[in-house]
Image (cartoon, rainbow, N blue to C red; front, top):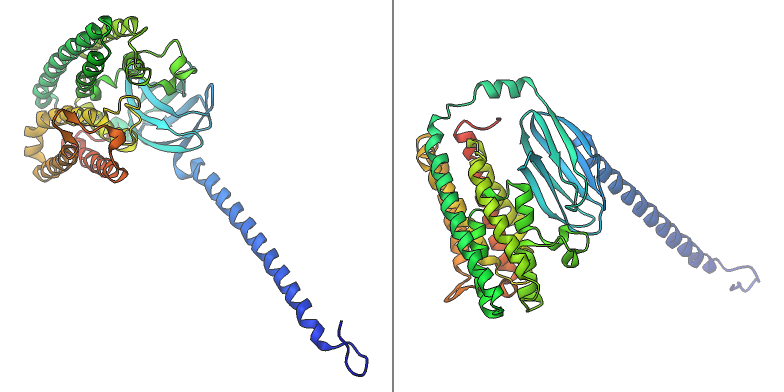
Length: 403
């Protein structure tokens, strides 16, 4: 402390102390503000996840989902799926063996929103791992759902498109069986290079019918489930189908132990073809199938998760688009009568995605997806989402919305 000539404390000693107090006060205020901000953000998140937002919150844990019994009113519903497990999961609404709505690859610790327009009835819901028990979803009727059922348009106009799509599924399923047969022959002969080459057209053949095949939950899981959905992932004895073969061929670089896997795949594809022809498709499901496929392409598959060992994703995207275009063409005469402007938007969005994929075309197929830039992936995702958005207008245009 300094003193004046008279021996009294100098007033110059006070500013440093005041400054220290001011700094300390500022720090306290900052900490308090940070705490208030954290509390507010957490509170806002809890409110967002509450039913006050109109969303039904479903939390997926390692072995189950909570709640596992849900009741909602018929019509448009929003489900927020929160993943509290340690792996990526999918969530599906099932009507018997048929998938009504789904969301794939929900990352650990994150949530995704699923919008579903539901008819009255009882449904099942998947809860993470394929081995987990399923939950139940009860949808109660409303005055609006009863009125919509009475206002359902005549199905006569849809007989032609539905019949033609059935023929398409039959021919494409046969092509898939032949492609898997070629893959099986290469694996059984022990020719790794030939098996790797045969895998690509076999996958593309499946992706052409994926919009319809993915409605059949059990068979689609047998044919197409990724390792994430099994408890022990790639080492799980239940892991089979295309991606088990892909793992062996492109990750392990071996055909060892793949002969029984491809034999089972051939059997499952045969059952899939029979089921596709046995299960009728309602008119409003034609559009919803291709919307779901394009949203999956935009939200999940554009990051390369689908073909993580072989990186032949782009070939699959092109096949998805081919299958989507088939449905659009079948509905084209009806859309031309009711909504020519929507049809123009659909064609423009389809061409935009096709042009984007053509940038990846090579002389012998498509660019390996691990060589595709993040910007190119974003462009693919954006154009797939844009296409899904316009395809979502098909049902209202044809008088099928609200059913």
